[in-house]
Length: 175
Image (cartoon, rainbow, N blue to C red; front, side, top):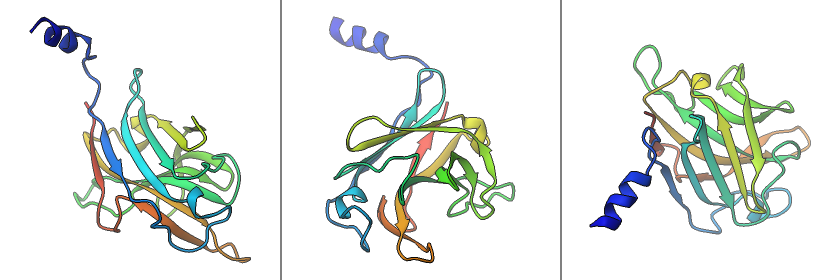
C-alpha cells in the first residue's frame, strides 16, 4: 500500500498519456536507399515533454536516416479536426521539407512552426514541436511514415507506415 502511494505521488500531473505501438519487421514496400531495414518502422510513440512540447519517437529496424539530410525520411502525419468539423487524412506533417525541419500544412507545405528532429540512437529519431503549430487540439490522430525518392525525377514513395493501412491512426490526448 505504501509503495503504491509513492508511485502515485511520483507521477507528474498534467503530462499526457502516451500513444503508439509496434509493427512487424519486413513489411517495407519498394526499394529504399540504404536497404529496407532503414525504412522499416518497428515502433512509434507520442507523448509530452516536461516543458509541454509534443514528442514523437520513431524506431526503425536498421540505422535511422539522418533527419537533416539524405533521400530517406521518416515523417509524422497528423490528422486533426478542421474548422468544418471533418477529419483530414493528413492535416499536418512533421519532418524535413526542402531542406528545412518543421511542422507543415499538408497540401500546400506551408511551414507553420519549427520542429526539433534528432537521432537519439542508431535506430531512433525524436521529433519535438509546440502544440500551437497544430492548433492546440485536445486530441489528434497520427501515424509514422517512411518515404524516399524512388527515381531520377524525384518521385517519392511510401515504404512503411505505423499503424499499417491508410485509414488507421493512433489517437493522442493533450491536457
